[in-house]
Image (tube, rainbow, N blue to C red; front, side):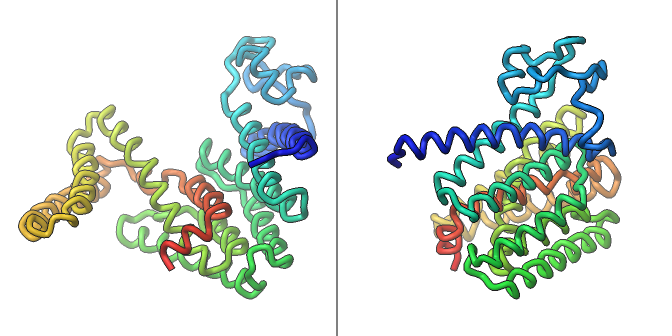
Length: 317
């Protein structure tokens, strides 16, 4: 991609705006969780509670110059702050370079900032603040009023309804089977927001992609946790599950072996699932298995779909 001097200058300017707004997103997310006002009091160290000087609030640079520590009490500053600032800035610049200086870019930047807010609160406390999702739903509808996704307002509304139905049905299936919701109410609200943005048809693929992303991210963490807590049987069951699925895929290319070996793999897979769900029932596998933050997976899947929807839909449809 050839970038002229004007485009580069605007990209830098937009990146700086993204850094500043990213810094504000940290405040909005953390104070939203604590119940404090986002306006008052001014920024302070969460450890010593001393008000920070203006130059210690410069996005990213302040973190580097302070060595990642508070200027007063020398308590370590969470890496979350620069990561959020950089993530927001990078997304702003990417949207600008892909969609130029336009209303579409502005809306996408706003939506991506809401995405980041949702990820922060879900990662930290497994909490989704309703207001953030309501704004996402509204922005999704507005985005489609201008027909940027080539879907009608009716399809956008249907996407909201489908997002609600899918996650509430799955959540209640979890309640019936293992006595706990498979997904939180916040996940339902996020799905409704993504349904407003993508419409019903594409939302299905976003959810499917998010489940794949969640599986890739969650299984290694679960295996590590079970080994650390000496739950070797559950850890072994999870590892075996992965190998069973890989083996089924590999054997698909060997017709002569597939018929003979597949039954044994399926038996092993069934044993794994019984072990895992038995552990959940007996509380030897924590119920948090079903409460691992799913919001970030939905958000990452949505970002992938924004840029590669044609390729992904073309692969499946």
